[in-house]
Image (tube, rainbow, N blue to C red; front, side, top):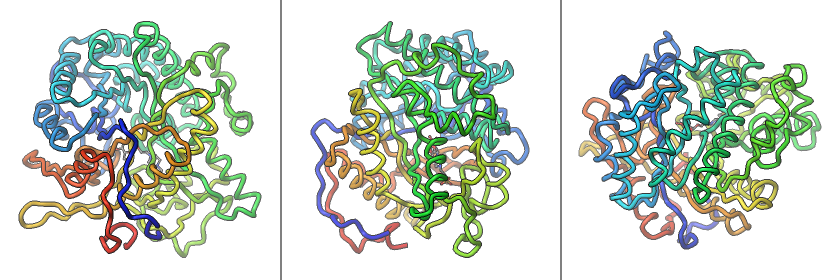
Length: 499
Ligand code: GBH
């Protein structure tokens, strides 16, 4: 990765929002307190071998009990906003009956945030479906979409007077295809048909929730957060690679973007999945609901990928790099990817390593992909509809090296975020209406199928003592948020560019 050409000070537009993001299951713990019942992740964690080291969410970062301390940390980090999710299983433990005690936790959290002058940015669903609803069919069942809209209304009823920014879903791609096609995530199902049905019903739930919230609260800011990739053909002059990249882009990005922001599935994607019965899942009127106008498109960006119609030659694919999103440590074209691909139509899509530096997740570090992604979204999707863009997640896992004095000098994470913020500013300069950035994550937390083995935090969590320690990246980010600007960066600072 070449050092960015400009390492000088970079100022952001007035009013640009600086935040961090978390998710309920990843930080709260207290999994059977306050009337909460199992989500699909509690159940998944009990499947032997499903989650690395047998880790689970019973304690996590104990945020349920330490939220005051954590909001004080946000204040110390000069955050304008905090993106968190509510746990459906806490608020509606059986999937349909409201539990006042569950809502009360979030009410206290929101009050604490407002008192600290931190804008609450609420996500209704970050992967933790009540297990009771999974037992009724989960997201592949159409009824779950209607249950989700009921849940959205219940949360709004309790918090709508104080929460002004609402995100329906976080990364439906992961819920659908890691949950129901590759099985790397809860509930661990492995079926292309189930993944596609889940994807459609997640979007239907999003649309029904937006309709309901809009009617109750016309002034609220409503949106969805999607995860994106940037699919580049390995050989742009090879039509087979170009076609593989098209299909990869279709199954990651356009499958959600087009219905939500253009009101129709892309025809090439419908053709690709025609043999999987997808047409029967989509009913008349669904796309009108799904494309109900939104105010915000949340963009989660971690990496892009080089895509080919052919497997990569063994050389150059280091043994032990993490594959796509699971507790797997095989090259992306290894046997696990072949048998456990999240893509319902995996044939002829191979992700090649480009030899770029990687994070502790094995994901290649590719900041310039963020510039291209944001400009494309603005031009092709959000611009024409006046929808604002926010980067709702970006960040990196690196192992913490704890100094004898307890401090963590994570220059790798700092350099990663610095490079991506420079890329974001380049997109603003090219016309993208990007109004804020949330670092993933406020603190180290439960990294899904990888348990506590990966650390994404600006703040270190000692899981023995629950002690929080602001890392060097966190101190630096506090300065960025305070100044609304990146400080000049000295080129000889070690970072992902120098690995
Ligand atoms: C987010 O998911 C989640 O919202 C958050 O909860 C989580 O903790 C965080 O990221 C870190 O994982 O094909 O090998 O190049 C990110 C999900 C990550 C999905 C990148 C697609 C491509 C991996 N995405 N991934 S690969």
